[in-house]
Length: 395
Image 1 (spheres, helix red, strand yellow):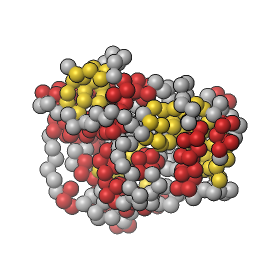
Image 2: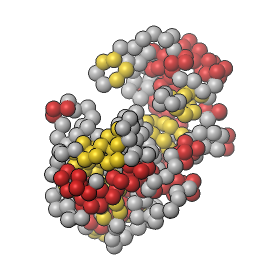
Image 3: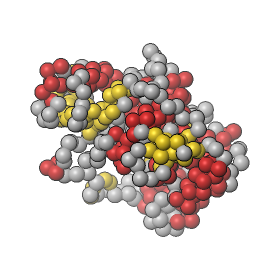
Image 4: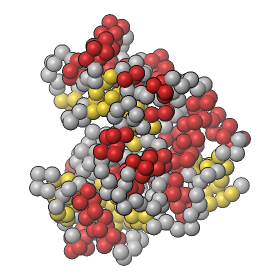
């Protein structure tokens, strides 16, 4: 059985995620397609303190790009991606629609993602009929307009909104896009999914599971069973047999990784680079770091998102991005795009133990590139964190 050092496993993971791909001077749809092939999914999140979550992983790999590439890929009759509950809420390649049919039927059987949507056949049929007549529609378009109360971390959902979410989760509706307020636009699947994709035969549950594990393995390069399950949020009763079958077929190669207690699997096509020269800021929702135990094992980097932590109890900040340099995560920065004043605010900046001497200089350059991409004129560094003084001197 092959054995990998942690550094080798780290470089395999970076290559699989596209961080070692040569950047194109002007990213095109071809660049986008290559990057999507690496990541597989792009998590969607409503937080917009810096940039929407689904745009950031593309930037981290492609560099400054026109966000209309993703907008074009996620709309129209020839769309390449569609929103679904694939990791959590995420853009996934549209050709996964037939693969997700078994997941849709499971959601139907348990009445939604969390099993909380009460049966209301009349409302369900009425909403589908109304969407059929109106075209792409938000919950607000279809709702009774009653005011909502804001409690805990978000807006209370109306019954219409809950049923619409159920209908999309089970595939009776699909997400056609989002409006300027980031509200979901629901439509009929036949008006969203390309006809040649809808016409494909639904694979068996076993075939679908193998395909999801296969894609997760390609995106990870090397991974434990837990990593492979998490990528598409699979249940172990499906992922386990799929992993075993792909091992038997030789597509997954069992390996050990120094310091890892769990067995791991190397995809047979994974690159094993000798070195890595990456430089990127990573969104909290980036596939490279979203499985926090894997992040800690690969990079010796403990990472927790603190958006939902009361301000006084936050350790590093509200919207903190790890900074990848070479093949290590060497720092983290709490960032905010102040669009009103045209500034990228560095609310805090911290170096990791053993960060190289050039960390501040490289991070300053990356922040300048990010500000330019976001059309912000200045980078302002606030005096919080051990890296802040050196960074402020370079900003």
